[in-house]
Length: 157
Image (cartoon, rainbow, N blue to C red):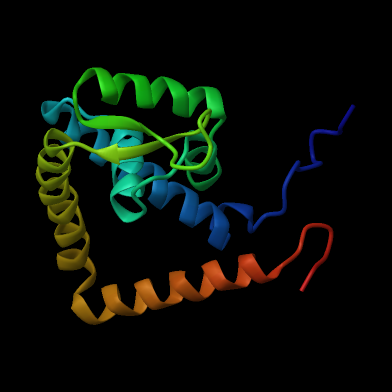
């Protein structure tokens, strides 16, 4: 049991970098969800299609790792996109039980439409920040990505 004057977090917790990153990501995701909905896409669909576009032939297991979701979640998303004709499964050339994923023409088309939507959101952010600060933010985020990649689990920098 805690006393009333005991705080569960430090006083500066609401101003931490990681909390700001999370709020920005949630805000961007909500806006993408809203604007992609008329295309019949959720942000998860867009992320999956982008991943397959970037690396044709990915397997469901590889996608799950890249998207940080369960293999079951990827399987469900893949099935939806296959049913919509936007994604197709192809047998792996050497492993008959492994299926590779590839965009269809319909998948490429919806991805192009979705990219226009996502680009408009990026332009909205860039207009608010200004081009120099937007470029600086991108560079800083890349540095942050590198910093967390370099940290091995169970160690601190």
